[in-house]
Length: 555
Image (cartoon, rainbow, N blue to C red):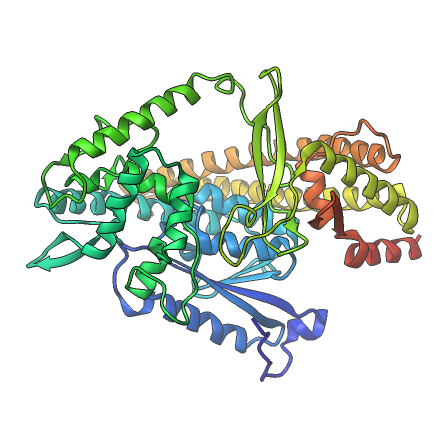
């Protein structure tokens, strides 16, 4: 998206620093949120746009949004796209309407505001809360309290929503946003009824028939593409099953086929969509109907017979039992240290990790493959897959070459690491100082209130009420001081461990293990090309290296 031009004069902050921030506007609206006009995605975005336009040190890069996504969970498509652009250094400032739009989980919010954003050098602005992390510490009590209130509100509204949905479900009303492929929704009074849409329903029946006749996922996907049948998301977009002139055709995914073959909605069952605060849409593995789920049988007209559905379930039972009892059952997956860094040098798509077993079945091997490799539409890519072993070897070789050719020295990189640690310790010490000052202030006010109470200037009820509040706040401050003091001790150990690793890495030791922390701190992007060739974009080759050179000049 093209950057927008600025109309206003430089703000004081921009004149002082000269930095212009690349802004990502983020808006979120829960599907169950009130329909008040000022909460719509459009109004949230417009409010943020006006704010950006009024500040000349801000320049809009793109807008991101999530509709129907709760703030207590950070696994949202729009949010993940925003964070990807943050990691790619395309965005270094996030603007939201208020803190609750970004999230309602106070622990996660504290993690982002207090650790992740400062580490990445990201500015964060909540317009209506008058919060800008350039002006204030994200771990102040006021911000923490606001985040905690937002989370409690989300939990309270979740209970009310769940109760409302259960009542609607008891009356046979569909409570979801989008019905399963093959069904539509019609309103009968205040009840939303599922009704068959015959054209996509015929596709569902054919998928079941082919699967029961022995066709695998690849054969079914190929048939759907040859017949030019839109996948469910595109069907909702175009409102017809088959591709027409001017429309883009995408192949179906295995997960979509799996969901259709596993969903008991096709035999007329309606599942209450909220169970213990979690949304239920179908089934996983061969657990067709969980005993904890609330199910209304014969709620609507079925598309698939119970006999065909049960036959499909039996096929999945055998396959799931095989995988659940196989040799990989007790082999947990290792951390994906390259997650978010790998892109295809041919088509630009993300590389994903695939896990397999070695010949003896006792260890795992990992490979990375282009996400477009298995597609059969116009996006299909023929790029080779690359093993984790080969990737590690190439990355270590690139580190060695870069360190030897660049002007960067070992002490430069460790100096930056230590400098960042000193900056973090300075912030922690300042927060400890504020905490201790507030605790001393509370103690002083307690003495003053006691004197007022003894001299008749305050009733016993007033004194006990104020004293109770002070005691609670003092306990919270002491806990905060204890956590901050522990963090202060942890920083030095983490810094020494990181610097020791960097020294080993720069010396080119072949047995140096690569870690996710170091890879994401040093690398912007890794582009994977055919013939096992990679191109690595280092963060320190640009802005970071300039900072190091300035540091050398001051020595």
